[in-house]
Structures are given as C-alpha cells and as structure tokens.
Amino acid sequence: MPTQASKARSAEELMDALTVARDRARVQAHLFSLDARKRWQGIEAKLLELKAKLEQSGEKIAETAAANVREVTHAAGELLRELDGTLELGSPVRKFMNDAPSTCAPGDSLEQAAQVMWERDCGVVPVLAADGSPVGIITDRDVCMAAYTRGEPLRALTVESTMSQLVHACSPDDSMGHALRLMAAHRVRRLPVVEDGRFVGLVTLADITRDIRKQPGNRVPACVALADTLAVVCEQRPATVERAHAAE
Image 1 (tube, helix red, strand yellow):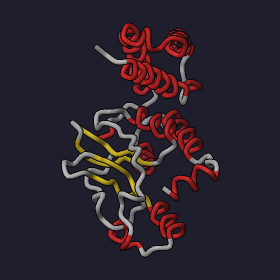
Image 2 (cartoon, helix red, strand yellow):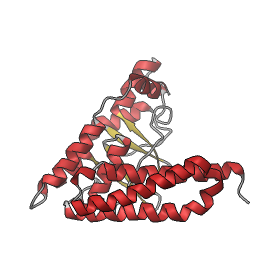
Image 3 (cartoon, rainbow, N blue to C red):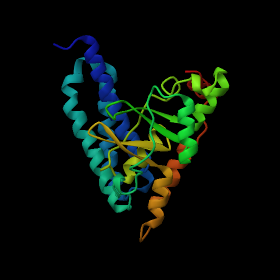
Image 4 (spheres, rainbow, N blue to C red):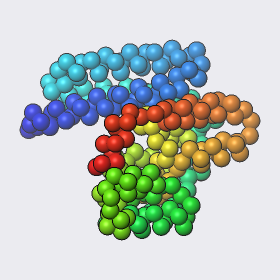
C-alpha cells in the first residue's frame, strides 16, 4: 500500500508532466495554424484543470489522475509531432547528432576534462557512469568558475565535484522540434542523447543550425523556432543562481 510520501511524490511527478507538456507547446504556439491553435486551447484547458486538481488535493487523487494525465500529455505530444512535420521540424535527432563525442568519468580530474576540451575543441563533455549512463555534464565555464572560486589546481578537483548533475536528455528518435523545446524549457544549448538508458550521442544548437541550413524548401518556420529557442537560452540568469552553481 503506498505511503503518504509516495502519494505526494506521485502527485508532484504528475504535475511536472503536465508542466512540461504545457511548456513544450507554448514555446512554439505562435506558429500554430488556426486549427492547431483551437486544438491546443482545448488541450491546455484540460492541462490546467488537472494541474489545479492536483495542487488542491494531489495526495487523494494522484492515483486516479494518472490515466487522465497520460491521455492529455499524449494529446499534446501528438499535436506537436504533427506540427513538427508541417514546419519541417520533424527530422529525427539521430540524423544530425554527434554520435562520437568525447566523454569523461565522475572521478576524472578537472585537468583531464580541460585537456579533452582543448584537444577536441569543444566546450562541453558529458559525464558517464561505468554502465554508460549519463550522470552529469561539465562545461568549460564550470571548469573556469571552479578554478576561480576554489583556489585549488585543476588536478586536485574532480569532475563529480563540479559537474551539473541535472541531465536533460532526448532520444535519437525524438524530433528536432522536440529537442528545441527541451532546450528552451531548460535553457540549455546541448542535450545528451540516450537510448535504453545509455548515452549514444550529443545534440547541440549548432548541430540543429547546420541541419536547418541543409534543408530544402521553406526553412523559415524552422529558423523561427531556432531563433526563439536561442533567445530563451541566452536570457541572463540571476547572478545568485550562477554563484550558487559555481560554489557547489
């Protein structure tokens, strides 16, 4: 029998799913056709209704609401997939991802991570566990801030002590539009690509930009989606957030 704590977690997870579904669609809502806009308004109304119910009495209805949440988030996903096809944002991530990026392990030193970045001319290195699953991301900025705030040589600091442990990932079969929405929702420029729990590649805004440039036909909708994502990602974060992350 589920405990109160597990029920609360279930309610929180359901609300997170509703929030993600809504955010994914709102990033590109201005590109919807009139018909798609009407469909989205109906879906969004259901999303907001479910979210309100969960916030009011989540522990009581979390179990019965799960099916409704799955249904409405599936409807939102289907609408977005249709939109991706219409706007030439339906290219699968596997088509343009980097399937051989450099990686490092949590126990590696920051000196080793910096060496990889220098030798491979990259600004980010995914961090993998022994089983190949992604457990973090470390960037050149992370290395610089750690060097500045901790006052220790890079060889004395581990990747694990500095990396971001919050990994937002996509699947190789996800669409370009989905990858852009994830980047905008979480304000990141790169996404690890994961299949069956294992890291299989990395997709970046630069990868998407190059793929859009190669596309035949009308590239304007894809370019607009790319510009919107870049604008959101480039918004300045509060200094307190930056400092807290650097001091972790």
